[in-house]
Length: 215
Image 1 (cartoon, helix red, strand yellow):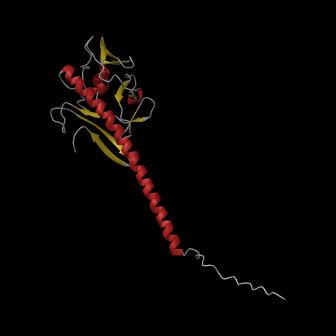
Image 2 (cartoon, helix red, strand yellow):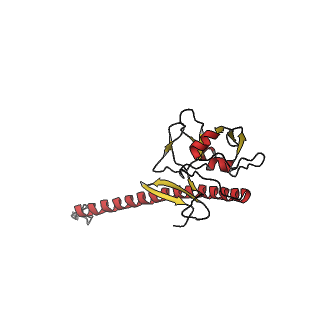
């Protein structure tokens, strides 16, 4: 007996067809949107981190200023000619007068009386009484203050610096840009009777003012 084997004809499977152009464009659009969202979230996270860092250092300086007032009876003097270059470093860390100069307790450097007047518009520092001068920023780190690029023959002058770059930097002694804390205690416009402390910072291409007052 002869058996005849019947073979079934293969039929095309119902596999999905190739993506159409419209579908490809939709997928690309979704990927682009997700990428933009990721970049946006990362940018906002970086912005939040920088803002938090500035606010944290501002809070420390504010506390030091209030402690200064509690001990001396007045807020640290500012620079009456330029609030963007205040003598906060010297007033909050203390100095020791030596003849017509002042020696810092942090760094033990000397700034001449002439340079105190030239840079800060004042005849001297208030927190400099022999045996009574106090450092109100005992945990100050080396990265939180820097020397401004001095004029020819002038003393090295220190300033408290903001941890984030600003729109109008000044050069330090190594020709690197630095952003200085601003301070006004003689005529504050936002905290009348107290003091204004603020920083101008550049974050994601925008200039933001972070101060010790409510907006």
